[in-house]
Image (cartoon, rainbow, N blue to C red; front, side, top):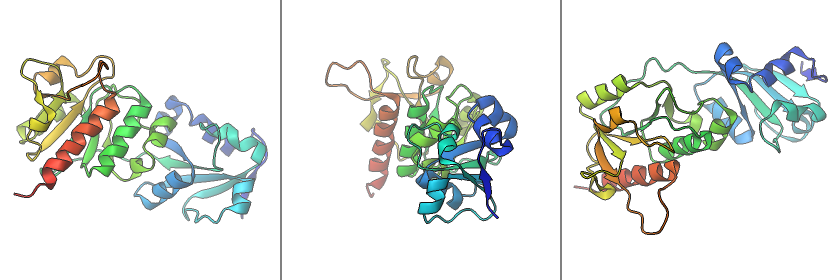
Length: 260
């Protein structure tokens, strides 16, 4: 039997809408994803979908394999947009349990990217998407990064959020422990000892570090890193954080694809 939501006073409707707020997400340890592709990616992942809600028109017109374990709710068309962060929702939203990251352990053969206070959720989602495409082992986030579970972060990752391990609250001591384990830490920084990014030896166990959009990488991490630069030929002062991350990640891919 399908549950129909026909009023904004409905308990489930209010619950889903409340998850738009970070404080509710963290209290409930749940977040929402919108759109056909993202919900399909979530269903195919190891994450648990607790609730699926669809608009009346979506339910009537779309042939969709709904997660068997999740409660399914059909929302009146005129009410559905109130649950969503996007301006033109596709008609489906899912409530998902946050995963536990307590068992993360770095693997020497995999590269990693660490985000040091990356504050824009669009940049963060794009970095996650690029790291997934480049075959990275995980995306590691400092405690000061943008909210991993905000709708914009999840949406910007274009489904990659569910394909690659993303570890929030990854503090500096854990990063420095990876260095002790043999990982080279590389960060973009304009210093006297900076090398061209193509000169970095990314064939070694590597962590690429991307800093805050306004302030760069913090001094404590800079002191532990090899410094690299991406040359700028024009008049731009710097590259967008997500673009710089992509350039470095794909230089690593290029180097590791060379045989011998």
